[in-house]
Structure formats: C-alpha cells, structure tokens
Image (cartoon, rainbow over all chains, first blue to last red):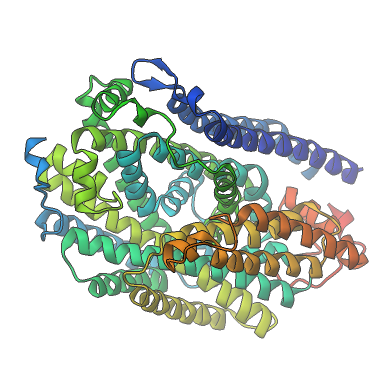
Amino acid sequence: MADTRLADLAARRWKVQVVLTVAMVALYFGFILLIAYDKPLLARIIAPGLSLGILLGALVIVASWLLTLIYVRWANTHYDAGLDGLRK
Amino acid sequence: MVLLQEAATRIGEPNRVAMGFFFLFIATTLGITWWAARKTRTTEQFYAAGRSISPGQNGVALAGDYMSAASFLGIAGLVSTTGFDGLIYSTGWLVGWPVVLFLIAEPLRNLGKYTFADVVAVRLRQTPVRIAAAAGTLATVSFYLIAQMVGAGGLIRLMFGIPYETAIVAVGVAMIAYVLFGGMLATTWVQIVKAVLLLSGAALLALLVLSRFGWSPTALFAAAAEKYGVGVLSPGRLVSRPLDAVSLGLALMFGTAGLPHILMRFYTVPDAKAARTSVFYATGLIGSFYLMTFILGFGAMVLVGPDVIRSVEPGGNMAAPLLAEFLGGTPFLGFIAAVAFATILAVVAGLTLSGAAALSHDLWVGVVRKDKADAAEQLKVARIATMGLGVLGVLLGITFKGQNVAFMVGLAFAIAASGNFPALVLSIFWRRYTTAGAVTSMVLGTVSTLVLIYLSPTLQVDVLKHETAWFPLRNPALVTMPLSFLAGIVVSLFTANQEEAQGFDGVARRMHLGPSAYRGVSAGVPGAPGPPSPGAPGSE
C-alpha cells in the first residue's frame, strides 16, 4: 500500500525533474546554437543600446531562476505533502 | 579618461587600504576558525558542520564556493574586452545550478553522509566504488586547486607586488588553518563572509557605474556601442565552432552537479528540504552576480577602455580592479583587491576539505579500514589528509608557476561531468546499475577526459605550441560524458546483479523519505551491509 503510493510519488517527481531539466537544456543550448548559426539575428538592435543577443542572454539567467522557482514551489506543496502522507 | 590613458594605475604598488582590508579579513576568519574549532570534535562536525547550517546560510556559502576569482575577474575582463562574447560565459556558468536542484541535491542529502561516493556506494560494493569515486574526486579537486593557486599567486603579485611564492604560501597557510582547526563550520563561514563581501563589492561597483549612465543599463550599452562600434553588442568570433561551444556548455551544465566541493555542501544542512531551498537561494545569488558582471564589464569598457585594461594585464583580468580605481580611487581598488584575495582563499579551503573527505572518509575509513575505524581515528586521519592536501596545493602552485593553467578549470568541469555526474545520476535513478557498471563509467569518464584533453588543441596548440591537435574539440565533454553514460549502462546490463537491484528498493525509499525512513540502512552509514533483512522495509 505505502509502496505503491511511494512509487506513484516517485513517478510524479521523475516527470517534473525530466520536464524541467529538458527545459533548461533546451533554453541554454538553444541560445548557444542561435549564437552559432544566426549571428545576424542576435546582432539585431531592438532598442537603443539593446541587441537581441544581450536580451536573450539576460533572459537565460532569468529563465534559470524561474525554473528553480517552479520546482521549489512544486516540491514545497505537492511533493512534501505526498511525503508527509507516506510518513504517517 | 585622459588620466588613465597612460595606465596611471596604482595596481601592483603596495596599497595600504588593501593591506588593511586583507588583514581585517584574515583576523575575522581566524576568529571564526577559533570559534568553530571548539565546536569541531566529531567527524560529523568536521565534514558536515554537524548538519547545523541553515538553508539561507548554505545558499550563500554555495554561491561563495562557486564564485571564484576566475568568474569575478575573468568574466568582467572578458566582457570589457570583447563585449557580448564575454557575456556568453556569464550565462554558461549559471545554467548548471537548476540541474543540481532538479536531479541531485535532495537525493544526495538523503542517501549520503559526507561524499558523493557514499551515494554511489550505498547499494553497491564499497571497495571498488569508493576507490573509483575518490579518484574522480581527487582529479577534479587537484586541477581546480592548481588553477586557483596559480591564479592566486599571479593575482596577488599583480595587485600587491608580493612575490609569487610568498603569496602561494600565505594562501596555503591560511587555508590549512581554516580547514584543519575549524573543519566545515569554519569553511562555511569563511565562504559566507567572502560571498557577502564579493556580492556587495560587485553591487557597489555596478551601482557606481550605472549612476553615470542615468541608472540605465541600455544607456551604458549604447555608450559602449557608440565608442567601440555596435559590434560589441553582438556575437563575435567566440562561438565560431558550434561543437566547441556545445561541448563546453555540457561540461559547465553537468559538471556543476559533479563538483565534489559543491556536492559536499548539501550534507551541512539538516534535511533534504533544506538542501532544496539552499540551491534555490544559491541560484538567485549567482545569477544576480553574473548579471552584475555584464554591467562591470561594459562599465570598464566605456570608462577605462579595453586598451588600458590589456596594457595592465593582457588577459583582461584587471578590468574590475581598474574600474574600482577609476570610480573610487585607491581605497576602492584596495577593497576590491582584498575581496579578490579572500575569494581565492575561501575557494581553496572548500576544495581542500572535499579532497580530504575523499582521502580519509572514502579511502582510509571505507577501503583500508573497512569502516572499523573509531571516531578519534577518523578525525585524526581527516586532519592528516587536510594537512597533506594543503601542502600539496602549495607545492603544485609553485610547480606550475608561469604555466598556462587556464584550461584546468574547464578540465575539472569536464571530469566532474564525465566521471562523477553519470555515476551519481545512474546510481540514484537506475535500478539495474551494478558495481562493475559504476566503476567502468567513473574510470572511463575520468581517463577518457584526461586523454582527450591532452590530445586537444587546448593542450597541443595553446600550451605545447604544436601546429595541430589530433582531437578537434577544446573541451572533451561532448564525447566523454555520453561515453561514460553508455559504458555504465552497457556494462551494467552485462553484469546484472540480483542483490544490487533489490537494494534499489531501499535506495528508492530513502531517496525520498530520508535516512530515518529506512531501517535496513541506518542513518547514513556508508558501510551498511548489503541486502536488507526481509522484515525491515515494511515497518514504516
């Protein structure tokens, strides 16, 4: 009984882990491959003093924060609640 | 500007303010060490600060462990001389942290005791796994340590005018004092003090820069583009070979999750939830720091100028100190120089402690004494290992004087990504992982990284000055990391082991519920005997 609930929780956590890790990998390597294959696009100036490349670079950092925030919020609510249920 | 055209800098002259801040830092950290030494009586206190560090404190200390002088001086310098290309590095150094959070931090805290070998060995055969994991740890730590030590010697000579050897010995003595007497508790607080100094120094510099551009980063970038051409805002030559960029990116992203001195920090907090929270704080702090390096770099480009920066030091490493001197005169230069020195000291202390844990906890206690060593012996061996590694660090620093060691940080990340990370992930998430598979992936990951870096342009062309290199990639992670995963999986499938697979049930439980949830393996004892007794797991 407890073991199927644990397996269930483990499976849900695994799904969250994989989705978030893949998102991080895709974001960062997407940025790197854009630099590699489409330099003119990133060189485009979108506002005075701001190129698309600089904006995207800063956004990779902001996206890293958001992904960690999403994970921590998920874990603090759903995962921890699941663990509490199992410990009872 | 006119004043600085002649590089009229006081860098390299004895600087009273720098010396004052430096001695203040040494006095404070030795005071912390004295306080911590009285609380360091057991191995759990020596290696893990008695699991007493709060998530917020550990978040700051993690950031301190990671923000080395290379990232502060190196990235600001790269941005100031190349613009956008330097910024690519800023993002690369951060993206490993979410991976640490998603995959590693919590299972590591729940499964291990002091080292990452604890986690890999938890249901596998102790001796071979611990030897292989300790080898990976020591390789990573040594290369990282050499890079830091050589950087420290050069930096201190450049900033204070002290001879290289004296600087290295001074770093070595202070670092040994912290770790030897104060263990993880002192190391953690040295990290915290240093991280706060570094972050506030960088923030103050960034604010002073922005105050001259109407508090607008884009006005700063626009000024840079006006002066040095719009090219500084767009990609240049750095990522001209996509595979090189992807390979380095892999090493940075997954190497962070395999760095022994980072992983060890997760054992200093009370539980897995605290480990989770501490990575969240660390990611926030490190990200803000790298965003500030954008401002510092472009600020130095506009206010000091790339030519002046290169004339002081060809690598551009003095951009941030020069910027500080321009904005706040000699006192601010002194403060930033002292912060850079503190940064190196703190990072080498963390590295030495994690290396000492591999030598004493994994090799001596786990392999030689088969977990029969009593507490007093364990602590004694840990201190001997600290002393030995500290002296070795000083000797390596002096041996590699004047050598090009910049590649060694990339090498350390590549070994961490190829030797340590795959074994860690597979042992946590894959039931059919076997001892043979784990040893193969760790040994092959480490050895193939060493061989390929030797054959790469990084060593053959940059260091040995040959015309060509046999292996095309500058960082081998693109080949070695998949190779290590593949070898671990294939060998495990060929050496299927019923007992080790059954042990995974306990691992799966303990990974989520913590050590107390699984009675078959008592709280974190690495040498707990193989398969659990049948009655134990069901009792929860």
